[in-house]
Amino acid sequence: MEVCERLFDTGWISSVGSYVTQFEEMVAGFAGAKYGVAAVNGTAALHISLLLSGVKKDDYVILPNLTFVASANSIKYLGAEPLLIDADPDLWQNGS
Image 1: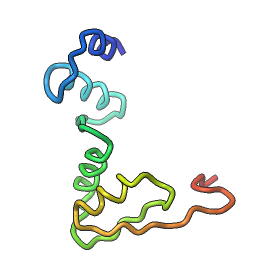
Image 2: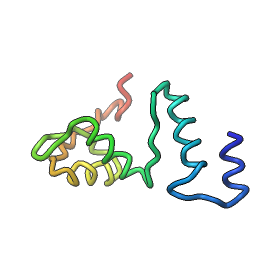
Image 3: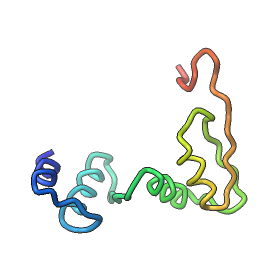
Image 4: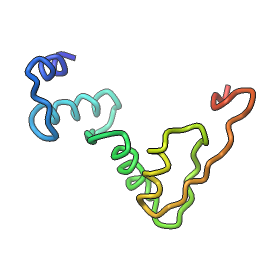
């Protein structure tokens, strides 16, 4: 958290630099992953995740119909097809 506080105190927010590297390392450490990658926004992060998952043109990707449009957009960017599914009327999208 100290890095984040310094970042906002200085007003130095960018797409590159030591703060981005530190943030990526912190996220990787928190997730127990070897690497972390910062993305410019959630849509870009979803796009990267789909690429890394091997989604390609004409694939179907299942997603809940109660979602933000970026979820479907990131699928369409790859030429894949979003397949919206209904939420359970009693549980919504909570499986328990």
